[in-house]
Image (cartoon, rainbow, N blue to C red; front, side, top):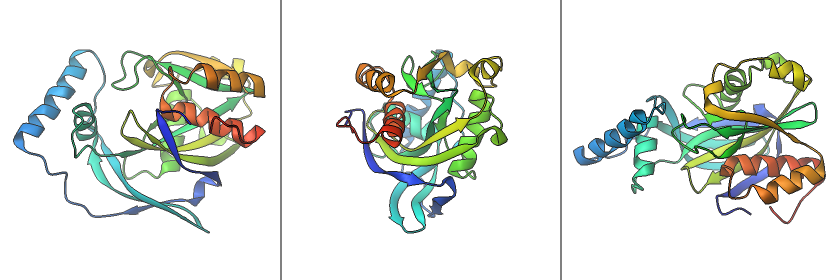
Length: 247
């Protein structure tokens, strides 16, 4: 367990076994003062050179598991409401749905140090790909899009994938679907590519996926990594090597 996050579910499912159930829900009730505060927060981020796009997001409401898979109940919200209300610790701050993956390339997991241009998690270690899900995309469509934009991986270059966990972050107001991905590309070939969203990472490096290296990273990065990123490496570790007390 890491104080930055908690597991709500762990297991292994095919990506096609994740289902979104949409609920029609009234917009978050915000006063004019709340709306002004949200705009002030977003403007401050933009003034610092950080990218804040007011894209639609899924607000997480509930989940359940049945023999068919994982079912997520969601409504609609926006990135500005999510960011602004979260920064303000507002009682109406929405939990939003996100995806991330421990991606293995030639025996290494892809780890980023987040750049100063991102609005959240600046300087923290995280897995790649990761990001929010923008309606009307499904979680798997969002992950494929993030893999293309952040790692320059085409969908056909992913030859293994599974969902390993559902994680609630205590620092970023998000619920993340945690996957593992594998590509047969070699590291040298892949590193020659320039992803569209390379600006998000100050640096990318490979974390060897042997048991000792993963265990050492999990212990050493507990305070320097984004919660869902740490959880993704832990999920990968337990998928490959079995349970650990850290979970």
